[in-house]
Length: 217
Ligand SMILES: O=P(O)(O)OC[C@H]1O[C@H](OP(=O)(O)OP(=O)(O)O)[C@H](O)[C@@H]1O
Ligand SMILES: O=c1cc[nH]c(=O)[nH]1
Ligand SMILES: [Mg+2]
Image (cartoon, rainbow, N blue to C red; front, side, top):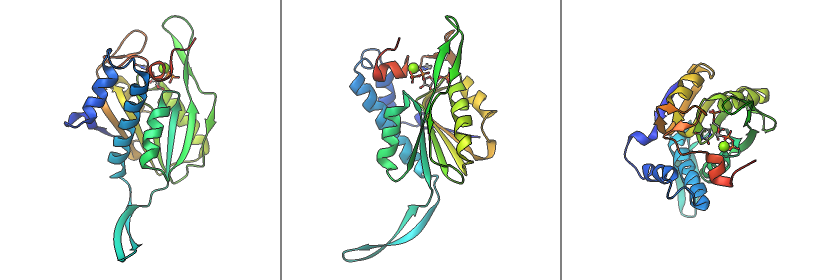
C-alpha cells in the first residue's frame, strides 16, 4: 500500500489544515466546510496525476490540439456525514465522476467503547473502475474498513485511492491489513501520532462532522 502525505511539502494546503485545527478559526462552520472542500479540490488534482492518460485530438475553432486527458472511470465515494464537503471538493474537479455514499457512525456502548454502524449505501457498480474513498478523518480506521467492505458488494475496483485530511498512524497501520496492498494508495494531508482514550486523533481537529454540521444528540 502506497502512502502519500501531501502536507510534507510546503504549499498553501498546510494553511487550510492549520485553519481546520485552529480553535479560534474552526468554529466558523462555513469556513470549516469550505476549507475541507478546498483540500478536496487540491487532493483531487494530486490524485489525478496517477490516472491513466491518452491523447485525444481536440477540435478548437482554429485547429486540432492533441491533448492528453484521463481515461479512468472514476467513482468518488464518501463516508457520511463529515465527508460531504470533502466530496464536493473532489467533484468540482472530477465533475465527470460517478458518486457513491456510505453512512458510518459510532454507536457508543458506554462512555469509551463503540461499534461502527453502516446503515446506508448508494453506489453505482464499481468493477474495474477507479474508486476514490474520501473521509476527512482516519482515526482508528474502522469506518474506512467497513465502508470499503460495503462498497465491495457493488463490485471490484481496478484501483482504490483512500483520501483523508488527517490520519492517525494507527489507522494507516490498521487499514494496511484491510485493503489490497497492490492496488491501494492512501493520500493524507497530515499524519498525527496519537489517539486519545475516546479514539479521537491528537492533536487532530476535534469532531469533523460536528464542526461542519453541528452537534448531534
Ligand atoms: O477511523 P474511525 O475511528 O472510524 O473514525 C473516523 C470517522 O469519524 C468521523 O465520522 P463520525 O463517526 O464522527 O461521524 P460524522 O461524520 O457523522 O460526525 C470521520 O468522518 C470518520 O468517518
Ligand atoms: O478525531 C476524530 C475521530 C473521529 N472523528 C472525528 O471527527 N475526529
Ligand atoms: Mg463526527
